[in-house]
Length: 124
Image (cartoon, rainbow, N blue to C red; front, side):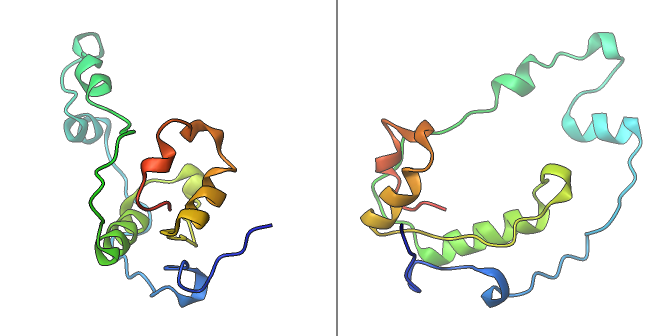
């Protein structure tokens, strides 16, 4: 049973500042607008998806230099404002773990990080 200290909790529920997102709501796009914004243009038969899929990567090596907490907070705030989510279920709590014990405890619940998870300076 692991508990998180107040210091480890950076953004949580009602303690987190309200995000003012004027772009929220429903935005209707035509097929042409979606294709243009994704870089896929032309007819269905002429779309080459290879560059799109080959440009996506999951980083599993981390720089050992510390990251300022303020930069992490700003990145999380921006992501929570604009990032798409499954079924439009927006995340409500983000925990920032920086202590070795806290990071180890959180990563122990997800085994896909073996071999590289211990190198992360911050676990969200």
